[in-house]
Amino acid sequence: MSTPEHAPDQNAQFDAIVVGAGFAGLYMLHRLRRSGRTARVYEAASDVGGTWYWNRYPGARCDAESLAYSYSFSPELEKEWSWSERYATQPEILKYAQHVADRFDLKRDIRFERQVEAAHYDEADRKWKVSTDEGDTASAPILIMATGCLSVPLVPDIPGLDDFAGRRFQASLWPHEGVDFSGERVGVIGTGSSAIQAIPQLAEQAAHLTVFQRTPNFSVPAHNCPLDPEFQAGFKANYPEHRRLHRLGLGSGFGDLQVEPREFGPAVESALSLSDEEFDAVCEGLWQKGGAIFLTASADIVVDERANARLADFVHRKIRATVRDPETADALCPTSHPIGTKRICVDTDYYATFNRDNVRLVNLRRTPIERIVATGVDLSPENPGDEGEHIGLDSLVLATGFDAMTGALNRIDIRGAGAARLTDRWAEGPRTYLGLMIAGFPNLFTITGPGSPSVLSNMLVSIEQHVDMIMDCLGEMETRGATIVEATPDAQEGWVAHVNEVANATLMPKAGSWYMGANVPGKPRVFMPYGAGVGVYREVCEGVVEDGWRGFSFSS
Ligand code: FAD
Ligand code: NAP
Image 1 (cartoon, rainbow, N blue to C red):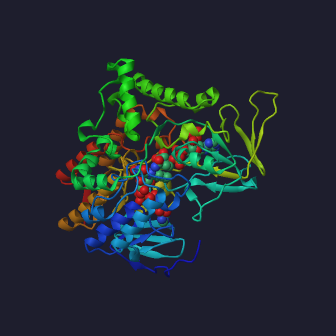
Image 2: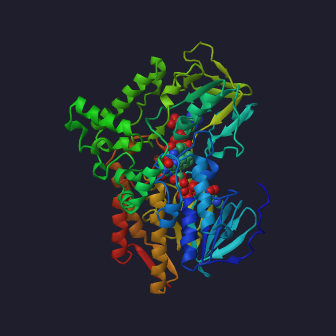
Image 3: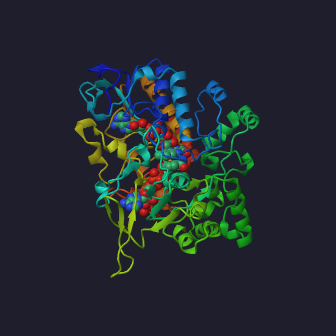
């Protein structure tokens, strides 16, 4: 890590400390400052942007439409910023984050290249004491974690990984200068959203690409396109109404370029009420529109296995119609989880890429990786007694995901009242009230924390809602003359039970997904996000506030 531009803070005092300078941290800082509060943001990266700072792999772009995946808090910002494509690329989104930071003069309160290592609540002082890897020490009565749901990359525990003598890259820690794969034999491990975006681009560049797939994922076409300036101007003229719909979570708030507002929500209540031909027509319509709205084919696909299987079958047929080699097509068809129970991938030419002569899919369910060696990957034999295959590689790309939702929080030594450790409290899975506060951890807020819709939503919508609610809560503290706000243990238990109840009424827990913590060895299997949608969640939060901040205790 390079030398930070600023000397470390020494016993610095602020009204609030924020950890993370992605979209959550930036908006939080802006609101804190606008309210006249002093704040310090610590960020591990050397610039703003969070996800969009770190994830620079080829093909990285948003899967929520840019006109929806952007801040709504400033009409001036909305007006002056133009998106060039339906789904913006990573460089464009990063530029947007940098523009926001400059426009609102945020960087002066951010300290970059600072990893927050510890945050301890001092009960006598009623302050959070924060320290970083660069020796900063600072305290504030309020601590806000804007550490991200997908900010801790996972390095797979594959034997021999460190023996590989070629170039190795992690999709989520991509070199800033870019990578030229021309003429190389490249391997990609993983077939989640990151890999599915990267694979078509890597295939264009590399001499040969081998895709190592353990579990296939469902992917739908993005139908990305340039945004016509006139269309964009018309959309923006109606921005308040679009934003209102995003906040209600219609279309999951992912965007509405291809959808008339009246078409928001499920196309039909039950897939089972339609004939095969009728349901196919609904699916085809959504497939042609592109994007995650494909999952809105019917209301029952998240709760009814038979309805879900019909939607999955439609995608299987699309894969088989696209991929010429039947064995490869078969291997690409997901069968081990219901569609929508893992994050749906949104792609450009993913399946068609497997028709290229220079691309090969290795089905790790048949021939698992035995070990990685200096020159490539050794596969186990398919049948006992056979020779295992060696695949020679010049470069290896790991698109193996994240320790999601709790990873960034659990990596910080967070201690609340009575020096209770967060990792102990969460040993059997995260427990929060509304995904916003944790009982026993006074004045500590988590933006898009576990127990809120977060990763099941357009995150910009959820981030803005949480930041606004935190500001309202700070305002309420002032009104009441309180110095401490805390979630009550009862409210937290009730919320955790409700989150589980909502999840268990759906097919979501049936998948070994990162929503369930299933991708991290030893992580408790708990469905972490709140699955009732951002509209319902917003209503719940509004009800809590109307009831005098039900479930929060204020004291001085
Ligand atoms: P982040 O952007 O993750 O920022 C958190 C920041 O906190 C990071 O910069 C990190 O370095 C910093 N940090 C963490 N811990 C510490 C610490 N201890 N000390 C100091 N700094 C720390 N969501 C969507 O809704 N639509 C999309 O299209 C979409 N696409 C995505 C594509 C990719 C490749 C990934 C990985 C995620 C995507 N997401 C998407 C989710 C995305 O994470 C959110 O949309 C959003 O960017 C999160 O913003 P954030 O500020 O909450 O977190
Ligand atoms: P991911 O969805 O968790 O995918 C990780 C992949 O790596 C999986 O295919 C997994 O296989 C594989 N893998 C992990 N360990 C492995 C091992 N030891 N051997 C073989 N394969 C292994 O991670 P991601 O692709 O980075 O996406 C994470 C989330 O980030 C997404 O779900 C989405 O929310 C967000 N994201 C969004 C976009 C976008 O479109 N805008 C792009 C990228 C990321 P198994 O399934 O078998 O474990």
